[in-house]
Amino acid sequence: MLSEDKIFTSKKPIACRYFVVLRYYSKLFTLTCFAWISTISHADNTTIESLSFRAAIQRSTNHHPELRAYADRMNSQQGYLTQAGVASPPEIDLTVEDALGSGEFNGMDNAQTTLSISWVLDSRIVGKRVDAVASRQSILEIEREIKQLDIAAQTARYFLTALAHQERQKIAKQAQSLSAQALEEIKKRVEVGKSPIADQLRAEVNLARRTLLIEDLTHEVDSSKRQLAAQWGDKTPKFGRLAGTLAQKISVIDPTSLEKSLRNNPDLKIFLTRERAAQTDIALAKAEASKRWRISTGVRRYEATDDYAVVAGISVPLGDSSRNKGRIAALTAEQSRYQSEADALNIKLQTQLFVLYQQLLHSIHVSEALSNDIIPRLERAVRETEKAYQLGKYSYLEWSAVQQELFEAQSDQLDAYFTAHINTVEIERLTGLTLTRLGEEKE
Image (tube, rainbow, N blue to C red):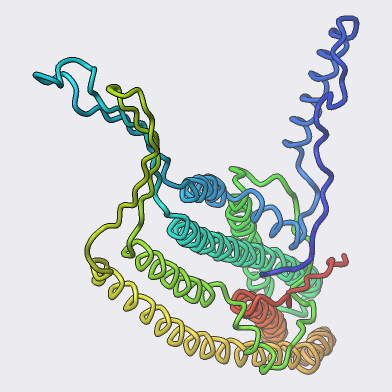
């Protein structure tokens, strides 16, 4: 799963759980319940200031609309499981012989009346039938796990995308601030005739573009937050900013350990579970093809002599156990297919894991190079170029070009962080390990 950490939320109280029904307190009970419902409704519509990564994952796995259907499917499967455990009911048989005929057999004087009860020995088949339904229930549980992991991974992508837009907006505002400072400096130089008016016009255009970029990123943030909120069924986001930072260091696990964790992949487990389900279906088919004995016992009354006697019998079906031969052959082929598909998927997952791991290492390397080497030098270059411009040694275009290089390097760093976290999410989905840790962003 994407995260193994559990988030504890306060449970809603059960209204008047320990209320003792007394007439004297009926009015107080009604007023208390109305006040409680109003409080809960107000809390559900409250917009929280910030949303953390883990809280977003928890909300989506608890309230995603597609997961609600699995509860009904599980209840339906439980009903089938209960029904599978029902054995064949016993049968009561009443037989009248030698009655309502002619001569000596006229009327009921010489009739023979037999009352018997019979039942089928099918306990073995019932057990196999329960095993077959239980195996399909296991498949449904893994399908729900797959859907839950897919939803968690998609929620993580939406969260990371929204967080990336939020941090791009922050970088854009810093670039806007630098452009505004540069414009003020240029205006002073233009006023005293040290710089041409063209520099001021270029600086104004540059500031206008920075402002448009911030507006564009604002729309991107709003759209990505709307997509994120839809993961738990909210039509509009009920949270403000996203807590965390993409600059959080990512834990890198040894690739050998990651490959060993692939056995936890639910896509792989479902093939193995289907293989076991096919095995239970084969056992059921063989049991159904076997002879099911019917035993009966009862009492017979002889009207002519007013006597009673015990009767008993055994019924054994004729034929051999080959009548389910075709079904057994088909199930055996399916079982072999599931094993082959599991082997093919295992190779595919190992390849995906290798590619993702290499991309993760590259993204981390790029982000560290930008953070440790490139961006610090560009920040110093911006300061030095500004001083040189003030002394008339550099033109505005050179100063603006260095500022643009810094902005692009910061954007590249953010892209590297984003790619690393997206790769981490995919690795988590494949292995079930928890690697993503987004710490609280410090203002």
